[in-house]
Image 1 (spheres, rainbow, N blue to C red):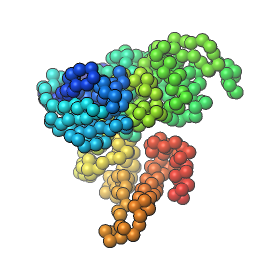
Image 2: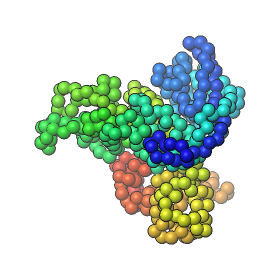
Image 3: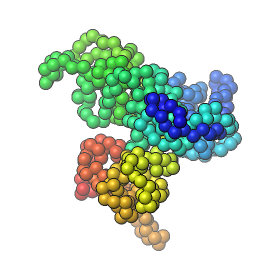
Image 4: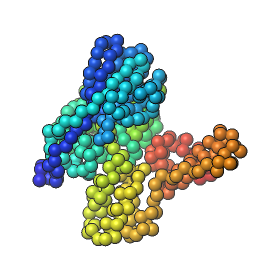
Length: 433
C-alpha cells in the first residue's frame, strides 16, 4: 500500500511503463527550434503558447498538440489559415512518425521516442477521482505536479467528465486545503448579478443592496475560487476578472478602493477557449492568465476499463453476483456520451429498478443519425433540404433525450447542451416540445 496524497491509502500498481514523447523541430523567423511534447502544447504566435512560432501566417492561438497513448494528436483551433499534416488540411488527426505539420509557412517535423517512466507507482485514485486506466494515470501525474503550486489552472473536458471534482481535488491537495473553497457558476446568473457575486458590493450600490456584501473572491481569501463554465463569462466582465488576476486585488461594486486578494484561481469549461480567442469572443490575455496550466479530463469512452471501479464507487454494496457482473460487462461496451455523470445516473436507476437487461437499456447512447433515403431517392431533394431534414430529426431526438434526462429542468438541459436558455426555449418551441 502507498500513502495517498490526502493521507488515505489507495492501492497502486508498481509497474514500469513506457512513456511516449514527441520531439518537434522547425525553423522560423527567429531561427531553428527543438521542443519535446509529453502532454499538451499549444502552437501559435502569442507569447503564452507552449510552442511560439514566429510566422506571420500563424494565428495567435493556432493549433493544439496532445500526446496520447497512440501518438501525437494535432487539432486546429479555428486558425485563419488552417493546419496541415502531410499536405492535408485537418481538423483533428494523429500524426505518424516523420510527419510534417504545416502552420502558416512553417513546417514542424514530428519524431517519436519512448522513455522508461521513472515513477513506477501508478495510483488508482487521486482525491475523489477514481480510475486506473492510462489516461487517468496521466491525469493524476499532472494533478500531483500542479496542485502544490500557486499557478492558475484551466480544466477542460466534455460535460459530465468530472471537472468540478478535479478542481476540488486540486484544492484539497494544495497548501490551501484548509482554507475556503468557493464555487462560482458563471453560466447560472445574468451579468448584473454575476458582477456583485464575484466582486461584492457596497451598501446602496444598486436597488436592493441594503447591506454591504463580500463577493466570492473575498470569501475565498486564503483559499481557492473555482470559476465553473468560465466560457460563459460575458465579454464585458472579462476585463474586470483580468485585472483581479493581474493585480491580486478586487473592488466591490459601488466602491472606489481596491482590496488585496489572496486566492488561487481554478476554472473549467466544456468549450474550447482557444477557438473562442480566435473568434474574438474570449480575451486572449485573460485566457493565458487563467490557463497557466491546462488540465484535460478524458471522456469516459477513452477509459472504459475504469467503468467497474466507478460502478463500485457509486454502488459500494455490490457483492459481485452473476447478474451484477453481467451488468458491468454490458456497461463497459457503451460509449457513454454523458460520461461519468450519465454512468452514475444509470447505476442509481439500476439499483432502484433492478439489474436486468430491460432497466440497463432504459438509457441509450447518443441517437444514431437518421438514415438518408435509398440511392434512387437521394436526388429527389436538393442537398440543402436533405440536410435541413436530417438536422431537424437529430435536434428533435436530442431534445427529447435531454428532457427525459433532466425532467425538463431548463437550466440543467441548457448547461449540458452548451446552449443558453433563450435559444434552448426557441429550439423546444420549434420542435413542439
